[in-house]
Length: 228
Picture 1 (tube, rainbow, N blue to C red):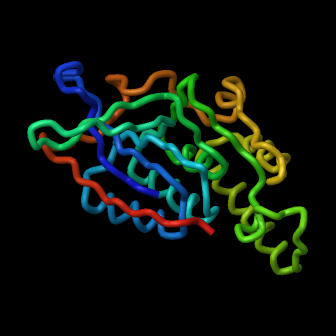
Picture 2 (spheres, rainbow, N blue to C red):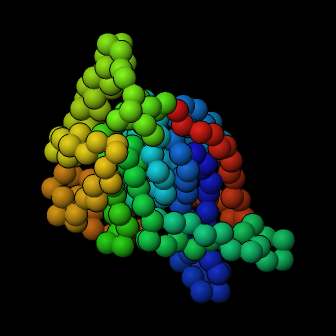
């Protein structure tokens, strides 16, 4: 997963009201939580808005990342960041579209936000967790007792995390009804609210904290990896 500070553009359109956010894109790998901690150490992320666009990934890394997001009192949302061409040597600006997806473990990272918003155009999709090296051929595989123990352990960790983050346990129950060989389940607007995945009705409100970024400074940590 890649973490980057972004500032809205073009500058002539948003002027003094250009929004700032951290984009979090890509697969959640084992290193993602550590990568975010490094990013947070080098950047003032407290109270910032984190915009997720991810297909999910490692269960344990996602839980660690969600807890780190909560420690920094961040707002989480779903969106697609598109970087604009740089002008006159300045740092590139970006646009933010609500038409994005937050899949699988991304839904639980979303829970890490102290405040959580999902735009109507975005989709949050869930399914069962599975052994990473067998998820693509789940029906064809055989499983050892140790592998089943690991899955049960991670379900327990997910349940504890969901409650800890203030989410409805119905979120986990819904995810566990969908096996990996079936299409992921899209949560409805009513379900997102009922499961406490959504806790605020608008993003970038004056009453919602946002981290500040010094003018002209857009620090980023660019790391990519594959989840197991």
